Length: 251
Image (cartoon, rainbow, N blue to C red; front, side):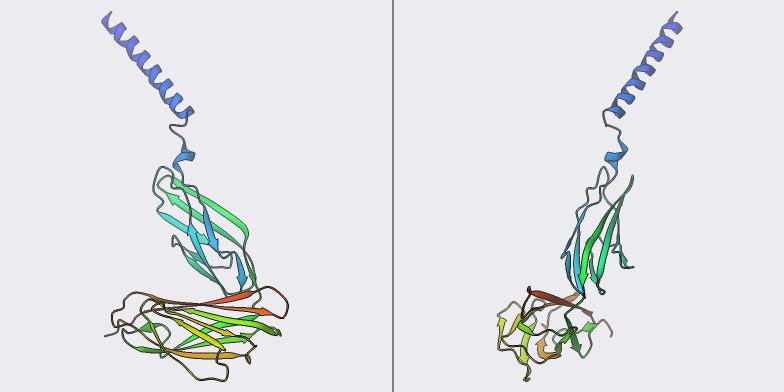
């Protein structure tokens, strides 16, 4: 008799447990889609002239587990596993960008078609650093040459350049040249050099200036710059240039 009662109670408990589990799954308590991450991202700028630097920011939702892997496909044959990469699009074109994120439970991907539009450059803006473009030593002096080269025949009615140096870098000299800007300004303690030409200078254009690095300096040093220009007719356009230097650890 007791055995029969126990058996009956066991069966009832099993049925109730099964129903509870089924109900939890049906109500979304056990839902695989909630466990997975949701990929999302933004890139700035979306459009510009080659070479175009785009800063990508991960905006993904992690789901029930932290995201552990990011995989970017920029659509131009290059990829990245950084969470928030910066990518250089060297060639004109229209590019699809895809981000895949993964957590403990699985992965999710987002593809944005025709997301980055890179136009043929009108002016090529580049930067040369001497004596060595890749490495630096604290306290040393560097010579930086900015180069603007025309890619199409266009008469300019406005041209400006802004250089943003790392914190603590001191601009010590702008070299004499027939193409010196009509106006230039160094913002104190900010590392910003601004140059403006009211009339079109001779192209190609080279401007050279010297900087002194601080005695206490470490980590990657990034120089960013932008050349803004406008033709006789048309909108204001810009090209950017970035350079990164790392510490020289050679004994």
